[in-house]
Image 1 (spheres, rainbow, N blue to C red):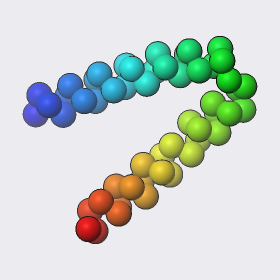
Image 2: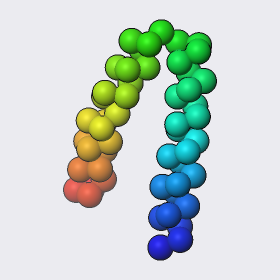
Image 3: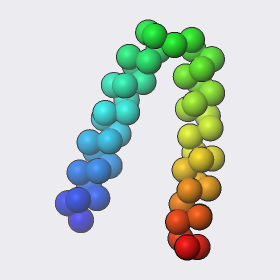
Image 4: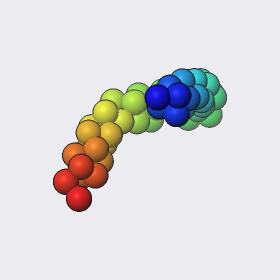
Length: 52
C-alpha cells in the first residue's frame, strides 16, 4: 500500500514540476499535445500489460 502511495505522490509531483519546466523550453502546443495523448497511451499500455 505504501509503495503505491509513494509512486502516485512522488511521480505526480515530479511530473507536475517537469511540466512547468518544459513549458519554458517547449512550445505550449507541444506540451498540450503530450498532456492530451498521455491518457490514451497509458490506457493502451495498461490493457496490453494485463493481456500478456
